[in-house]
Length: 109
Image 1 (cartoon, rainbow, N blue to C red):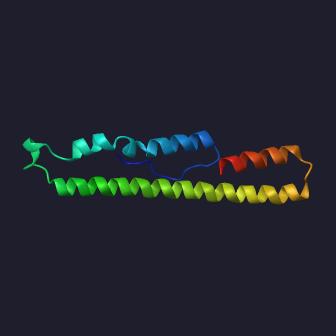
Image 2 (image 1 turned 90 degrees about the vertical axis):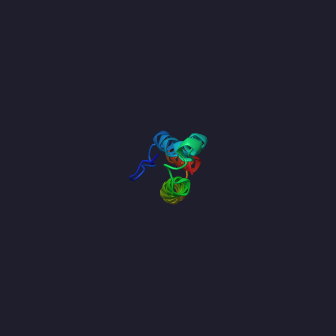
Image 3 (image 1 turned 120 degrees about the vertical axis):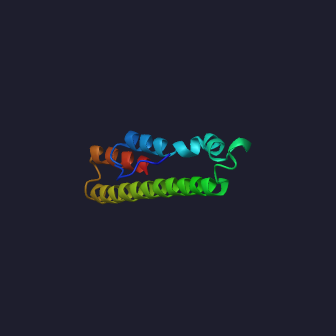
């Protein structure tokens, strides 16, 4: 099970959550993955269990690495937006819309 590739957009939080849900599929189905990776007694001679386990491990590590990279990227992007909004807030402390946007971004982080 491969995780989706490509740049994740952090603008739409619901879309970002859905992307993470899809990327977690391999973790959520680990029991199934193990059952299909480790051969039964009748298939031991046809499949190298060491190699298939290694491939499963590499797949898991790749999925975790991609997911971590996307999460850290979105945290970085959102933190930069929060910093900018805080600077704008200092210049216009009475702007309610700005405060609302700042709180929204802080919640995302």
